[in-house]
Image (cartoon, rainbow, N blue to C red):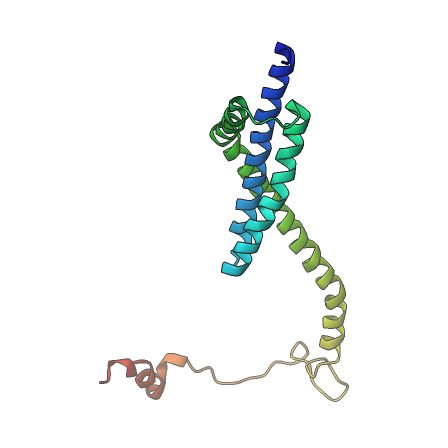
Length: 169
């Protein structure tokens, strides 16, 4: 029989195991929310979740009470899960979603910045070589003024009929 301190240490280890299981489950929920996997991927990720959490729980039990299964072990794990999901789950999920959002925005910003860094000079080259630039035989609009009669767009009856054509059956 262990001392009272050993039993309290073992109970605390089982509560910590429940907290850790809750944290892993929140990470798994977040991953599922972000990726939205299909049925096969869901089944494989469920299996992977249990393959990861089972040894972690076993390690906590091994540290706490030499992996003896007693009633207080189950009580501690459920108490740890209950405390985690009632108190810390919302905080952790919001924190992880915030980190994910800002990480994604940082990555997108860096990619867009690098893209502009490499494409803006090429845009300048393309614009410089375009047909709109000034050539020696061509008059610039800034040097001369072209006199044309000004017509309003709405005055043309054909255009007005085209605009009102949606009234036809």
